Length: 433
Image 1 (cartoon, helix red, strand yellow):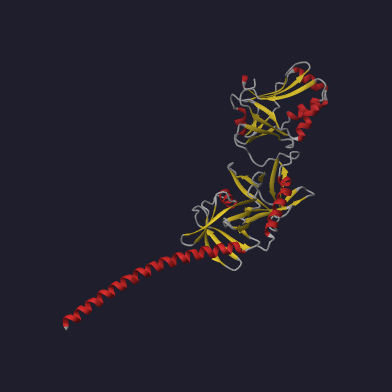
Image 2 (cartoon, rainbow, N blue to C red):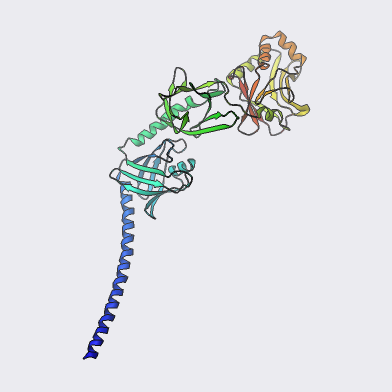
């Protein structure tokens, strides 16, 4: 009897162990399956939410805490397609694809051709994998933590009421209207500055139409230049804001309004009074005069005279004895710049011949007052007021600023007496003489 009972106990024990093992295996499989199901459910939930807004989504893309958010519009479609609109020039509108995946949380990824990826590259944000933070009734919040150099950036999608696509189109329209106002007027001074009342230093101002961005540059006492580059975000046809505010004496400067009467952009800030205006030079280009005067084996071609300077030259060309004008830089005999007039008396009569040794009067200033004008031109100028005035203007005691142009060995030459008079000397591929 005892033997039978023992056998039964052993059998029951073995059966229980086998049953427990099977149950354990089923439970683990179920857990894995449930985890996959939950992951897919979360992905499906997010995708359904993205597709649910008939009017799409809008977002103020906060890619860094110290910059103004960029407005974006998203319209998610079937087959993982998305249309993204942006007011930033060059990234206005494009349809691309998106995918949803799962790591620690559901991730939203855009393909490399999308508008937002272009923004990330433009703003140096690094990877573009957006991790889901929260899904609310009318908004979806993502964060990008892939960039190691900057603070994490956020993308909060909010349900659009149908007006946001139109809003971005209106911003683009406003940009088109702002462009000629922000662009340099060739008839005005070559220099354009941000001048602020009560602030010791001034900022040089430049606008890049291609990227719709601008640069403010100031200089410390040691001559070191500090650049502040920012995208321009159009608010209206007469107002813009900086995506990266400028700070002056600790005060934020980011909003500007155009005044059509003065043709200036005025700062909109109760604590500061200032404007973007045409004026005189505020930056010193250290070593520019030496760079201009000491170049070897180079010739320069005269190009792009300002309207004021062009009118001055046209007056000279109307003189009966003069049949042409030529500007060049000839390195033979150490000549630096030569301005020649073609006259009926001689094919090329030298008007100015500047030498390295005695024409530099500042770090970025040269003077034409010490010249070797040939006798024919001097006699002609003594009889003709237009030519005499032109020669006097060119030999003004103030001299000319030398401004390096695009780091290609070319220079802008600007009259210090009146910066509306300027021209460019472009570096030639080989000596012309």
